[in-house]
Image 1 (tube, rainbow, N blue to C red):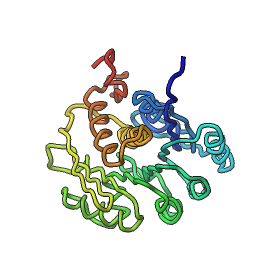
Image 2 (spheres, helix red, strand yellow; image 1 turned 45 degrees about the horizontal axis):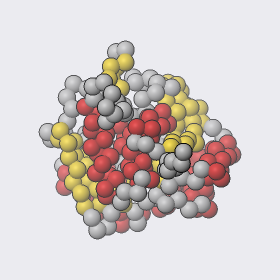
Image 3 (cartoon, helix red, strand yellow; image 1 turned 90 degrees about the horizontal axis):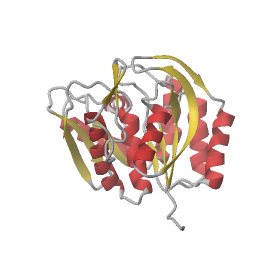
Image 4 (cartoon, rainbow, N blue to C red; image 1 turned 135 degrees about the horizontal axis):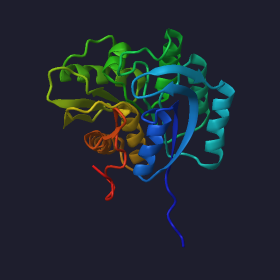
Length: 270
């Protein structure tokens, strides 16, 4: 029986031993959205829904070999990055994409965690800005990351517009500023800008649920929809709906909540 091949997507990110974020969240998202997920692990973490207790980076040579292995036999239609951890690993990723064409490169600039913890050193941040972000098709900073990248104080939706336009002009790519942590709003608001098209994306807040991995899932969903042939603006719109549903249908694991990546499937429990 002949079947159409699945689109391939590559995630370059850290591993979450708790299963809620990072590579694990990306692969669950890819599976739920009917694309084949591949992975290049940048670091392993000792992590649970409450905290990260240790991070162990891989050697840059090993990261390069992982990416080369995927590209040689399973060329991805879209790639996304998450936690890259160090200057040397960011440089390795940048060198790969300087030498290999990828139709769509989504950079989730994991610099500052939802908890406020800094995840990149100042040197690594400089390498991200100088080497990797200029290669992006789309960057997806959260509120704190957008503030760090622009120097702006982001307090209302109009500030998201300013940040997105500044970043799009600086790096020559589309930008999605995630404003889910803006205070005083009834909705989670994000701002997309690609130089021509601007989208204000909003969804009601899901009350009483505290999850992590939403940023990873959001960018992974965008990559999946791009690999399936959607335009970037359509992919962002569809991904917003998908991640909102994953939050709204969250499940309990022990004392914690976990996203429900499979919420769109007919047999998925709500």
